[in-house]
Image 1 (tube, rainbow, N blue to C red):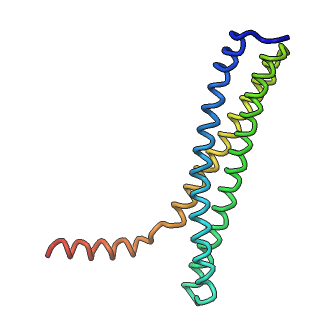
Image 2: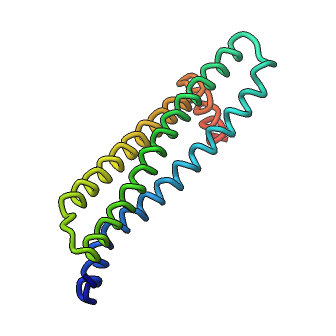
Image 3: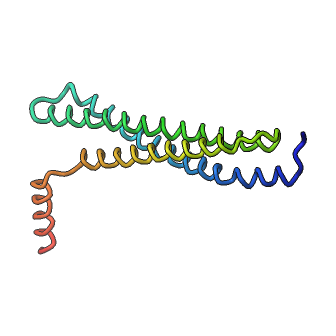
Amino acid sequence: MTPDASAIAQTIQLSVTPVFLLVATGSLLNVLAGRLSRVVDRSRVLMARWPETEGEEHGRVVAELRAADRRMRVINNSILAAVACGIVVCLLVALLFTQAFTGLNLGVAASWAFALAMLLLLVSLLLFLLEVRLAIRAIQVPMDLLEGEDMGWRQQQRR
């Protein structure tokens, strides 16, 4: 059975929403890859410094390396969920076109694929949020440093 032009046009219209989801997922992957790259670069710097440190500084380097390792794991899992989302979206578009060209009723499968893609995107976004929170926690400046810097800044402003 050959589909008519209107069935193909309708299928293309139906596949636009999943394609927008695919574009958004690609953009998210770009952000996640950039964050992962920055964490990896920072880890390399810390690992180079690690053998040269002692005492309190050594403890800070080790703590930051542990935090970086956790961030890398969270980002990696977020990337995994986003890639899985992209794969499911591609499967969804394939299901829509298969339905158009074969006449098979794949509406239920397409609905499940869309729901799964949204769930995977949600997981990826939640992991992204967790990673951002971990990053903020890892770089919080101790209050005594802030107060000392603030005092110096205020004294300079008075001059």
